[in-house]
Each structure stands twice: as C-alpha cells, then as structure tokens.
Image 1 (cartoon, helix red, strand yellow):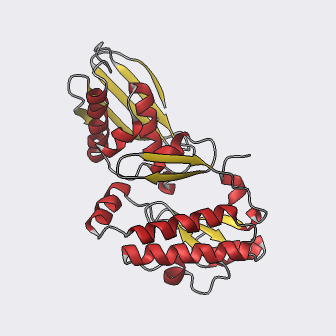
Image 2 (cartoon, rainbow, N blue to C red):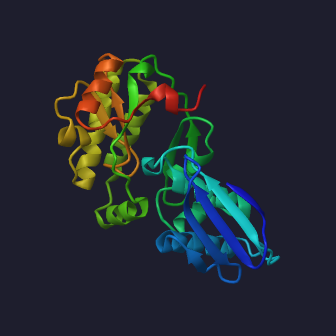
Image 3 (cartoon, rainbow, N blue to C red):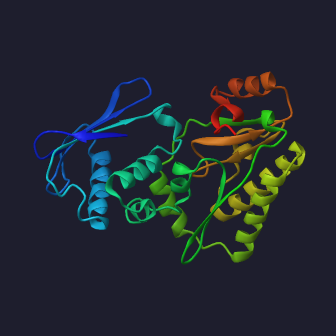
Length: 272
C-alpha cells in the first residue's frame, strides 16, 4: 500500500491486481469519507467504514484536509483469499496510527488472528480470550514439509459473512477449545507425517461438529491418500494437504478432480 499527497479534498483510491490491472477504484470525500465515485459500491462502503473508524481512533488522521492518493497492490490472484482484507486493515492502521485489532473488531468483525498474521515474521499461536489477546511465536519446520501443500478450492469466502454465521451458532465449550489447542500444539511438535495427518483429521472432525459442516475431504476427496484440512473461513479459499504420495501423484489427483492450483508448502511460507 502506497500513500502520497494528492489534489483537492478527496482520497483517490486505486487497487491493482497481480497483473497490474486496476480492479477497484474509488474517490472518497475527505469531509465524511463517503464514496463520491466508484466501480464497486459495496467495496467502497467497506473502505469508507474503515476510514471512519480510523478517525474515531485518531482524530488527527487526515485532519489537514489535504487530498490523498492511495494505491494497493496484490501479488497473488484476486480469488485466492490469502488475507488481502486483513493486510489492508493492518496497512490502514499503520497509516492512521490506529489499533489494527480494534479497526477489525469495530468494522468487519472476526477473531483477529488474520491481523496477527499480517505482521508476523513467522508462525504464531493466536488465542483470543474474554479480555485480552495472546500471540506466541512458534517454530514449525517439520522434516516432512515436502509432503505439505496448499490446495486452492476456488471458492473465496466472505470472511465477514462467515463470522456472522458462526456467531449465530452455539458457543463452543471450554473442553472443545482445550482439545483444539492441544491438537494445535501437537501438530507443531509433530515429526512424523502420519501422526500429523491424524491430527489434521481430528481437528477437522471437531470443527465439523461445531459448524455442522462436512469436512472437505469427506465432501470432495474421499479417496485421497492423505489428509486435508480446511483453512481460513472454513470450507473456502485454501486447504492444507499432507500426503506421503509422490508430489507428481498428488498434483495429478487434484488436477483430475478439477483443482489445478496446488502450491508446495515451502514455496508459500516465509523462509526460515
């Protein structure tokens, strides 16, 4: 995200995709951040809401009434859903000197985990309590990392909508939360891919019961030799895959099933 002084009493906003093409454009009033002109009214409303929250947290933000030009750039396809919204919120918080978590909670909603990931320099455990947030850096560099992949499911989820739907459902018990935390800790410590796959399946079963949705593997890939775990807004975007089968066989399986985008874990995560 690049910001520079512009002209007039407007914020001129352009968002570029990974090919360099403008996919979103809007002009916002500096007076009340209302969209003056845009090619996507719904997205403009969301950004307007974020800008208003920025000024609520920091009354000095844009108080000079000087026009601004904002440009954002994606380095992956639009439909991948790799935290583009949370990264935008984090960048806005840096620009406005605002708290990124409050910016999220007071606009889009969510746990805040994706915000923590937006500025993390490596893997983290994230826990949202009743009164505070806990973030712990962890080391995850398993010997079976070449058996891990990210599979694009071609179904980008609306995180805000998913959060609203989840809140309608009953709150998970502390016992379930403790089980999920324990599984996460075991996954990080795991040195064996078979054990890791069992933990993936256990985690999927727990979340499946909470959300009353079938696990991705049972729903789409029941004969796959390995484990598949949903990520992000459960059931969309990407899934984590672990298999001891040759990489060529894993890729061939998903391609034949109509899912050609399979990214090796080592190509997507931050390098050690």
